[in-house]
Image 1 (cartoon, rainbow, N blue to C red):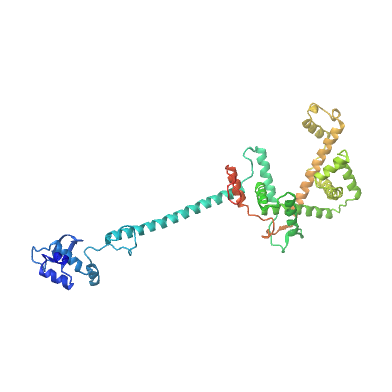
Image 2: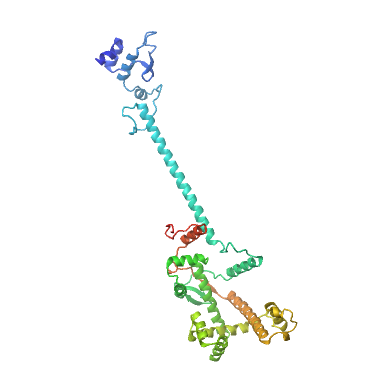
Length: 412
């Protein structure tokens, strides 16, 4: 019945073409709407199909666009090409145009999401780079308290210390395995360097990795610079031993006893003396052993003072001027006769010791500059190595008023 209603009023020619499935020689102005005109060559002038006829022809005709493409003809109104249909929200009886629009929207949304993800990744990489850069600058920045204001003299002293440190830097070289440094051909084993560091670490209660890392950050050191510092001290000791041998310096038991009694006389009771030894981690025996090196060093200093071209003799005028600066009661004194003899002797002794120490430092500095020194690269398996970046990071957060633990959890 419905078919009869649809075909009612149609021309016989149109019905025949629809029944045969043939393509009518017509052009549809719009999808299912508007007037439909026959081809000018085949249709009578002024002839027109009704809307019902156009609808039946549209339902019966094959895909005209596909036929035109196969024939090499360009379609008059090409339909938009959409991706294969993907199920999307909405009723199942949506039109093809609606489904095409939804598919196109989904494709556009996926593209935008990809771009957003790339942008987020780039931003995160930039932020991470800035953070690493800030941490690197913090690791190399001078460890000066913000509450301290350096004077010009302090700045000059700091600059001089940095220059001396650079001048004393031991050049790196390839050495035999297990050798940390060489001093004029004499080896310093890597194991001895490690033992010194580990013993000091245990004595300071820094066996824990976190405590060790925090200590190094607080001291402005790294495992590399710590090792270099220890090697520098061991090099100085070895150079002194070599100088003592070269100068044929001997330390007798009497030399040690005299030095011991001189120090012991500065303290009253035996109980006080024992407390001093304990505070320094010494016993009578270990202190006397230490005095052997001290006496030998003093003898080298005496020779250095004699050979020094810059040494000046300590005169009465020098003693008096220094006494005036130390003691207000002698500010108006004009001669040493106006000063207590014991005080004057102590000041003279102090000035002579200072002159001897200065001569010794100059002598050993020159000796070090002439020495053949080499240092190997730090091994990767020494036990005092620790990754310091987390400790610098937590230090920066603490300075900013935030407290976090090393594992990243917020501190209570």
